[in-house]
Image 1 (cartoon, rainbow, N blue to C red):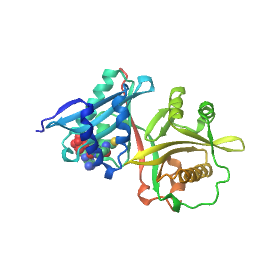
Image 2: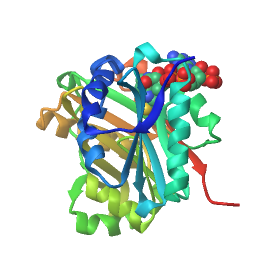
Image 3: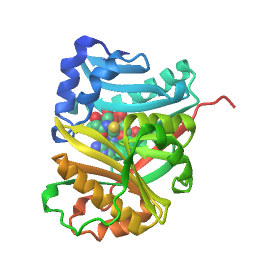
Image 4: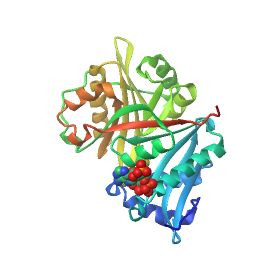
Length: 293
Ligand SMILES: CC(C)(COP(=O)(O)OP(=O)(O)OC[C@H]1O[C@@H](n2cnc3c(N)ncnc32)[C@H](O)[C@@H]1OP(=O)(O)O)[C@@H](O)C(=O)NCCC(=O)NCCS
């Protein structure tokens, strides 16, 4: 039986945490870029597992939506200590933190191939609330396509909120999933996503037919361009995809990570440059209702 201790993460755990990140996803972990902010934020509750004086696992509960949502993120277990039930312990610890903080719901996203994550979500009674497609594309220079005729245009934050409301029908499940986070399609959620991203609006005959969110995303020390595209039609979707790729090229981004509604999967996969391995890749948003019955 493994002798471990569950406790809050402290500054001196940083070396152990970075070591875990270095050994995660071939060193392409986004977590080190977030760690500093998480450790300093009063909205974050970072829980760790200590074995033999070293931190070998961690997870963060981020209180968002004015404290209504407990966002679960950054779950990591050192490879040497995996498959011993430690992630399950950490997940339960986040549930306990959520109860203590009085959140109305717990949420998290994971990719559809992460069976450990999915099993952990089911283990605490979470359900899938939405599913979105996702792709990564590096070597952008090789992506060729004729000019985008009516490229979506960037809009200022002050007007983005009203425009998003105007484009409400594009968000059929009343959620915005961007950069692996989920925001409610409410005044609060919209304000948050607008604060954290650039917004691009596409139009056809005056009517909004696509909304794109874009944010810098650091993975493994590389800053790529993370986008989410909601669109009315395949044509509007492709216009937005190609104009964002052009933009990422201008920014000299090494990669684009794109999230999109599942109805655009087929048309996206027809694009020759889409890596085959992204074909079955999707983001699952899990949710657990924490309101007392
Ligand atoms: C995902 C991760 C946190 C799991 O940690 P862990 O301590 O090995 O997990 P546990 O031992 O608590 O196992 C939890 C469940 O996942 C299952 N599981 C663990 N690793 C698995 C794997 N590689 N493949 C399939 N199932 C796996 C276990 O069987 C268990 O399910 P069960 O109780 O239904 O049998 C760890 O593998 C990790 O750090 N991975 C890299 C980062 C990551 O993917 N984080 C989660 C998404 S943000």
